[in-house]
Length: 334
Image (cartoon, rainbow, N blue to C red):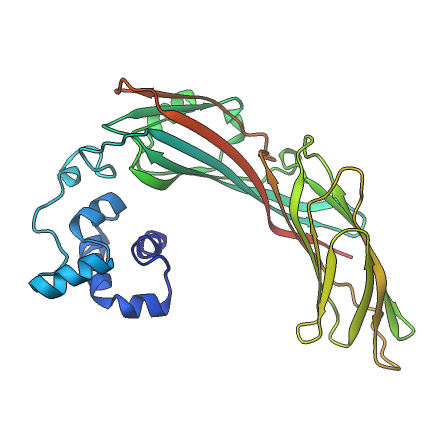
């Protein structure tokens, strides 16, 4: 199902009900090639784009004029090769290979700052534009971190099991090379801290929240957003922030604090009060704070690419590796 959704997104720029209705003929053509009697058959995007032309304006106009469907009558050569995920005869003026190591941090932190649970979900996303039939190998400085992994079909599993090296002939274009999961708490560094005091009594609430960087190796924490779901009886919030701005939605009862970038010498704080109807008591209300953030050039797991080599071709491509750490389901209890 994920592969079908990814294919629809590549063809129609989005996978929505309206996009499927507008391109229902192409959807049927794709499903007919991707499935054989209910079993997956051709799921590689390179093969599908050779078989079925994407629904561009030019292709639609040609189909209307000629009356021919956008389905090729010739079987793609790559479908019969040992590497069906890569089309043949690929040529580029500029040969480039970019790899993004993106990690989502899921964590639950209690009111005392103790980590209840923490895990990392990571992907290595690739955007490869290389001529010919290149054979790539990627090694890591600390591959032992990766014990729960899944690979793109292009990866040679025996080489990984024996040497912990990713050896593969890459597809042409964008794809996910590897996904991994790290759930050992002593290997999951929490990159930000949140100290919060939220209590309700005598018809009003007090809010005091402080946010700061933690174990970021000097990298800047950016796109920081704090969301606090308030009790349904709260009618308004009046806050003072040292950094950023806040909004309160009286319908969803959510207090949102947009911090942005955390400066090293200025710790973001938000203090203020909440208003409640007269006689209302919310003593047992303990809202859970949701945290969003993004850190560039940092893989919080410590994963790092050591070498990226290319074989089977004579040219020297441009290679780049980028690391990104983001908040997944990051919660702080109060």
